[in-house]
Image 1 (cartoon, rainbow over the protein chains, first blue to last red):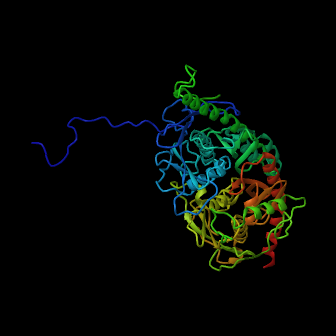
Image 2: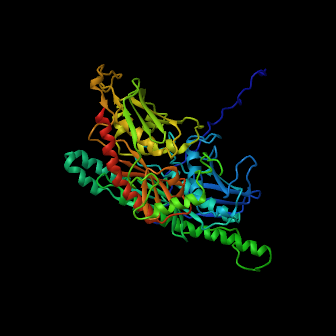
Image 3: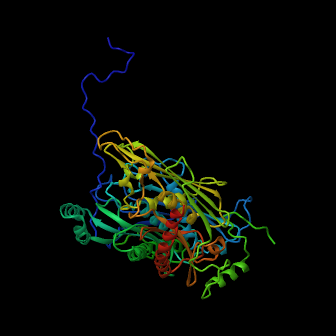
Length: 333
Length: 279
C-alpha cells in the first residue's frame, strides 16, 4: 500500500539535474582598440511615450553572456503640475533605473539606490544642455531610461574582478543612456540645439604585461626596477571598453558630446594612470578619445533618426518606394 | 520685486539683468568678482581638526556664508569575509545634509570615487593580518546648507579629518586575532606624511575666457560650465560636470580647467596642511 500522506519521489531513480555552467566573460569579440562595438538603435518602440528609443550592443558568441540593452522614453513637453512654481524654461528630468534582473551579479532593488540617482543626475545634466528649454515655458520633459541588461562592472560586491583598476560599466551605461535618450528626445520632436552622443574611452593595461612587471619588481631592488617596470607596462587608449574584457582599465572617461557644435555637455573621468606625471595630459587624451567614440555613436543616432523620419514621410505619402530600411536596424563598424 | 527664491530648482534670486551684469563683469580681463576676490582665491574659512574626542579623526570647517561641515572618521575591526565586495567596502562614506532629505547622491559619490582610486595605498594600510581589516566610516555632516555648492567645503573638511586620523598600532602577529598597542601616542596615521594624501575636490567654474575657483551660487549660475575636479596627491583622478551653465563647452575649456585646477590644488594642499600644524 502506498503512503498517501506524503509526496513520494518517483519509484525508479532519477538523474540529477545538470545546470549549465554560468556565463563566462571569455567570449568577447576581439576588436582593435579604436573600433567601437556595433550598436542597434531603433526609435518609437514605446507607443504611449511621446518619443522613445531602444539601444542594444551586440551579443557576443554565447547567448547567455550579458550585453547592454536599454530603453529610453520621453514624455512631454507636458504642463508642469499646478503646485510647482512658474518656470520660464522647460524642466527636464531624467531618471535612470536598472531593472532588478539587469545586473549579472547582485539583484537590483526597485528603490533607486545611490548609483542610480547619481547616473540620473548626470544624464539630465548631459541632456538639458542640448534641449532648447527656452522654447517650452511652464512645461516638463521627463526622460525615463530603463536598463534591461548590462554587462556588469558596476562596482557591485562580488562583481568586480578585484584586479585593481576602475570599473567602466557605469560609464558605459551612462554613455549609452545619453545616446539613447537623445535619440528619444529627437523622436519626440522636441527642439534641440544638437543631439548628444555618449562616448567612453579607457586607458587599458593588458593583464599579461602586468604579471611580468610584477615579477620584475620583486626580483630587482624596488628603486631601480620601478622605472623599468613602468616602461614595460603597455598602456593603450581603447575606445568603448567593455567591462567584460580581459584587461585592467587604469582610467576612464565618459563624455556627452554634441558633434555638430563641437561642444561637451558632460565630462566624467576617473582613475589615474602613471604615478610619475600629473595626469592632466592623460585626462586630456582620454577625453579626446571619448569624444572620438562619441562621434562614432553620433553616426548611429543620425541614421536611426533618419530611418524614423523617412518612415514618417512614407506614411503620409510624401515619399513612395523609397529605400526605407525594413526594420530600422542601424549598425556601424 | 519677487521674493528671493532659495530652492535649487529655481536657481539664484537674481533677475536676468543682474545675471547678465554679473556675467559681463566676470568675462572682463581681469575679471571682477562680486566679492572682489582673485580668480583663484577662496573665501575665508575657519578650520580646525581633532574636535571630536570619540573619533579616530575629525575636522570642522566654517565658511563665511554660514556653511559648516563636521567630519568624523571612525574605524572598527572587521573580519575578512569572502561574500562582500572585498577591499572596496572597507571605507564607507555617508553624507548628511541637515534640512534636506538624503537624496543628493552626488556628494557621497564624488568623495567615495576619489577615495577609492586605485593605487592610493590606503586600502593596504587597513589590512590587519590575515583575517581582519579595519573598516573606516567617514561620516560627513553639513550643518547649514551653504549658499553655494557644498562640494569644496565637504572635501576640504574630509581631507583634514582623514589627514588627522590615527589607528592604533597592531602588536599581534599576522595570524593571530588583532591586539593593539594601548598607547595612543604610538598610533599610526591613516595617511602618513610622505605618502599619497587623501584626495580633494575643487569646484571650478568657467566664464568666457576666465576660470574661477570656489564659486558662489551666483557665479555658478552664470558660468558656462561647472566642473568638480578631484586631485589626489599630484594627480588629477576625476572630473565631473555639475549643474550650472547653459549649452555645452568646447573641449579646450575643459582642458584648461583641468590644467589650472591642478596648479591651484598644490596651493590648497599647502594651506590645508598648515592647518594641522597650527593646532
